[in-house]
Image (cartoon, rainbow, N blue to C red):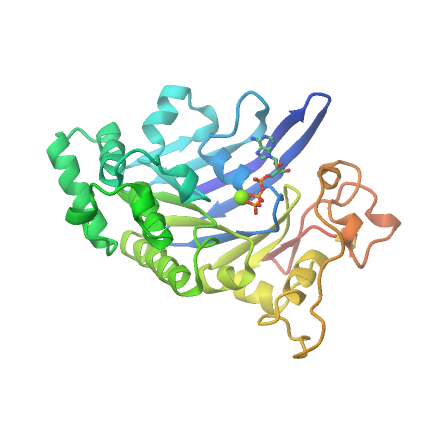
Length: 325
Ligand SMILES: Nc1ncnc2c1ncn2[C@@H]1O[C@H](COP(=O)(O)OP(=O)(O)OP(=O)(O)O)[C@@H](O)[C@H]1O
Ligand code: SF4
Ligand SMILES: [Mg+2]
């Protein structure tokens, strides 16, 4: 297993007197060579979870209350629990054993530093090589992602297209051959064609290197095209998880059912020219509160039974669902 998250709870106290479990009792595993999607709408805590796996959650307002984040790296013969590492040990692990493609390349790339230098810096932080050797590795890696490494090495991020900037982010994440990759909505800001190219690129990298991948997205059609298994996430909790194909063809949880009904290309009930289904209301901070199902305020099946914390249960030995029905 490449990643094994066990009963992880992370508390976030963004407001002084109000703390929420932004990640609540999360257990999730990813095998080597497997892609697992985390699907959920804006504000559900997907990025927070991704950042927390790397222990990049803001320490002044959040803390890991319980649980473990084990990463097993067969190729480098290492096994670690991210929760137990200190700051120095974490710096030695990030990028080398586990890497992340961040949600927005426009804010994550340094705008005043040439892209080649940004990749070289990442290599020099972990590998005992000369600057010249690191630069050659960076050029080769850019070439492998269809960016002419030699001519683009000295380009600034603003001189590249959105798709190229995303590939530079992929280069920075993958150049040290980590065992595990977290890709946080890497295609959201891209047009359909470029988005497809980036998805294929991530798939190719995974197939060549056999790494485990967590793919964070709000788009079920993207999850369907790229992942083996999917976890549907809402207000910090897994609502449903299972094999992606089965989950989309036969959703059980009211939130998954509602999400699928909102996507014409996935919904069996969609009739062309008919008004598209949408989930009433919005996800709000109150949905993270304890004492009720977190989807309660928007659920078409809710009743008084749902006014308590709802545990995850396993159905047919392979699907997990958090619902009283
Ligand atoms: N640094 C922070 N300070 C305060 N609140 C935060 C911080 N980071 C995240 N949050 C809050 O945690 C919750 C989850 O945010 P997160 O960014 O993980 O959502 P998301 O699922 O990634 O959404 P999106 O799809 O829009 O990227 C939100 O309510 C957000 O306001
Ligand atoms: S527990 Fe109740 S409110 Fe929550 S999803 Fe199930 S039916 Fe809806
Ligand atoms: Mg996000």
